[in-house]
Amino acid sequence: RSLYVTGAKSRPTIDANHLHVYNCDETSGSSLVDSGSGAKNATLLGTSGTDYYLGSYGTGRLVRSTRFLADGTSTGGARTARTCSISGGKVTLECVAMRIDAPGTNQMVATVDASSDGDFTDGIYIAANSSGCWFAGIRMASGSWYETSYTAAPITYSVAQHIMAVYDPTASPTFKFYVDGLLVSSAAASGTLATMTRVTVGTFAAAPIAWGSASCKSHVRDVRVSNIARSASYALSSANALLAL
Image (cartoon, rainbow, N blue to C red; front, side, top):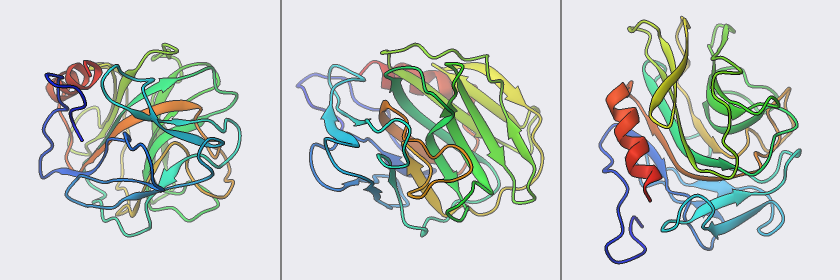
């Protein structure tokens, strides 16, 4: 699944701490395959050709992506069953995404959560906002909510970008947000995340919620969830490798 053309560059190696890894390069089927150690496939929501396309080359010359189309509705994403088990301690969420146009509202690109359908009560997410920027957020099990800057990471439209959010309660700052391998924003988040049980790509929930239910009209690939806090050097090397594809 890593190589499509003889001599092409490959995705960076995954390790045991990569719990969930979705290349999003499927060309058929109803789910995104998890090649991480957690092995939890994500079921696609909506209808192919209406809410999403599989096998698009929008984010690279050599690897395919899933393109989510339904901007402004809750369909068009993919999510696992609530059978994941991701510690509420250190966590890293990263992906490669390409926005097609400016979102009309906040739209989640990838999430890891322990929420019930109906609202985002606890978890970590990467999103695009109506100001045309990437940002990341955390909501603790206690209800405390933290987000990185809404304006520090402008989206480069029609260009693939590597986006990574890291929460480490033992570090300072505790919440860091990287775009294309560079630290662009941070927040002094504190508290403990619940053990997270679901990964979602391209939207948040199958039913409308308080916010973020709109499908992110984007090409998305290489969603990776780690149960450790990835470093700044990892952010740069991962971005360089994934964006070279």
